[in-house]
Image 1 (cartoon, rainbow, N blue to C red):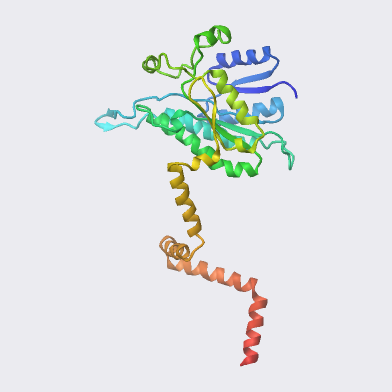
Image 2 (tube, rainbow, N blue to C red):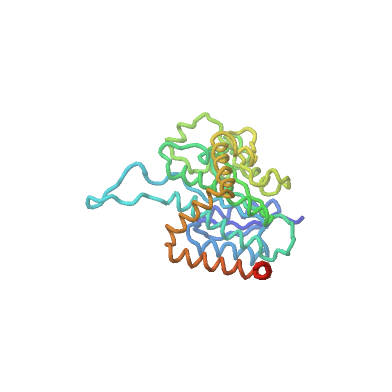
Length: 320
């Protein structure tokens, strides 16, 4: 196995180049490019750079994120009329991630041979806010709740494509002062995403070491155990990383929702489902269109079973 090959996209080109240098110092190979994750063409260009530089893409980590921007709870006005809210948090944290994940489905398969079971993975960055509401952070919590939902929705299909997917959910990230002095003197002591009032509120509370978050990402992407695929990894403080297996999403309120969903699926096989289906079809399509569809379906069924039907007709005529 050769050295790590890393492609970095960031608006902060100086910080990206610094990270490239750090990777190269320890024997890796890296390249960076300016990228605004909210711009589709920027993301396409970044993936194209990866293919041009290294030939393939194996792991994708949509890591861009911003805190709550704007005041969603405060309605602003211009000329006496409400202005639309600031949605930059959603644009970066959700739509940027959606762009990356959508593109990853293609680029992870570039030059991939049929039946190739080599490593392919997408690791999404959620938050503790994927699980709980954040006061004064409606847009941020909405974006991070969505990240978990995206992972859970994509897992079943990605499993059959042999692409791993998982989410990482850290509490507020940062290095302790000792770690800052020992291993990260060239980097901020925290991620600079948290406003000063929140930093003061968190004073004395253990933060999640950035290196531990990175370790969780690598573990989620590379662990061959099928049970870790489609799982969520929680980092609540500077302690252990907790894995939430897929099946545990069915506990508590999730159990109620899962039971309801299973009931609906079972009901889909019953008479009640078909009754509702016909009623809804009439409402949506109208009677003329539905009659046309029904006639076409009957014609196809008749044609597919023409030998059986003709045999029955012959027997009926003979009996007559």
